[in-house]
Length: 369
View 1: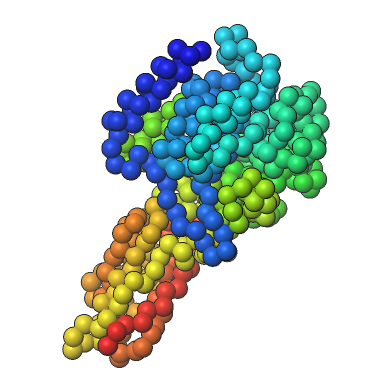
View 2: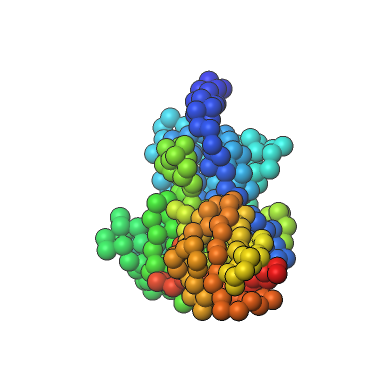
């Protein structure tokens, strides 16, 4: 086993040296009243059907500044058990927790309840003993997770292996699980896939919106980190970085998904996050004109793509404006007469609050005379 760990460490270190750049670091600001925790709550290792040991998952998370990972090995699907026997289903968590000590990565104990439809796959996280979830009746597995005060969410409900047309199948059993509080969240993003149908179900049933990597191989290979890619994560707005605060935030639904340079979430949480990311940094009137030379900055990883909805247009841009990640853009704003302040309104095209719906943000500009 020590030889396996050493090989994985050498492989990972070689990849790390080769990357350069930001190595997939995910960086978003806190929002008023809450810390923004970057979470990947669906990952796999060799303790179910993944290809790496838990230490690699922790090392990836450290490098990318992931705040929280959840070990969510399949309970019922263990393809490597002939080579890696582990009757204790908590083993992956114990290893990951060990490797994460003295680091900023918080590791949550979880398991993937792996069944055909219905009910499909679900993650139970914050569990105390994964072994007790390994029962024949799927409903009993969910009830045992509830006894352990888990947070339970529906994994990739639109997965084509269980739904050939990629729609979410809301069976009677799934509706019962939702109505009984045994499904509290739903993945609208899983790996490289997104479902607007799952997003609508989250809104209809007030489920927590989640996005996960569901990673089985190396993060770098799957999400092309060397080329500037990033894994999908859930941004959770918690009062502090503790497990109880994280669980409360998830149960309250305070989340936004970061996926493929897009933000997905309920409108109020999206608005709060975007307002914390985009600021009017400076503005002044160009000499002998009523054009306000205005700098708008962005302190997040999101390259915001905006469409102008305000009554003003621009001297140096069309109605489509991009603010680069951790950068800024200059807008020369044409107004008819000088004002002490005015408001710009934009539709955020790479943020989604409902199917085919984008949030509106307003920025107050106060130019210097």
